[in-house]
Image (cartoon, rainbow, N blue to C red):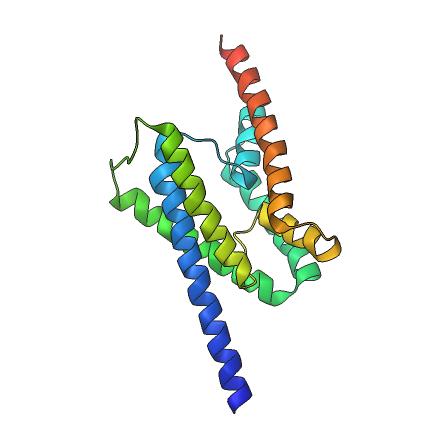
Length: 183
């Protein structure tokens, strides 16, 4: 009776917090980062690198990498984490398609990319943080961070930062290479 009700209420609270976090993440990504062409980190960044290097459409490596990471997460971190992560990814996907079809040409801070990048990072970071705080994630490199965090005493933020530094360094290298090829 009571124990079950408390567990159910806790689950409902977790999913509401994940939804709020993903709304923040989607606003940061769609309203501030995408319109000003600020480079993505994480799996979208890796997918961009693969696209520039091979011409393979971004959604293919993105899906394959996410599916592989989710299988690993299921085995290592458990079903609850995976269900919350899939839920978070669905919320972000739905909100992103909503924003792209309803925001149209609203570009906040279009001529101020530094402010757009800053605010986008704040919204995205707060969203990811809320998701992690209740045992979920936005998928991708967040899953790597959660797995490393389970076995090593390294904070989630530090692992994500290391992944992102690596990915953005690769992006800079591949975009320079792409620029050289087109000259």
